[in-house]
Length: 143
Image (cartoon, rainbow, N blue to C red):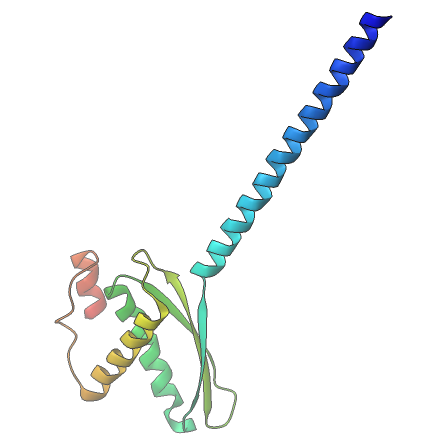
């Protein structure tokens, strides 16, 4: 009887250890999944803006920002814009960073948007941009 009780105790202890190990593995997987989710949310970060702009200039401004989507590809990252132009003399938009292999910050993107819009307003050309993507694609986006 003593030997059987010892075997039962060993089996119970091993079962408890196994359950603890399984619980530990599940906990680690949950923690890792949370980090992956946070990193994904960080990569999909977006910024909202609202501009007071006359209705007759909204379409021009929207097209300029759509052109910036191509410009961003030339700069080695990619952004997409979404717009809300339902308000009178107001335009809301946000940009979402969709590709960012060089970890460009939102502040750098804001600076790029400002520089891009300044170049457009002044009628400057964009052929002086460094080639950071495939040269053929660079030329296709420019022209």
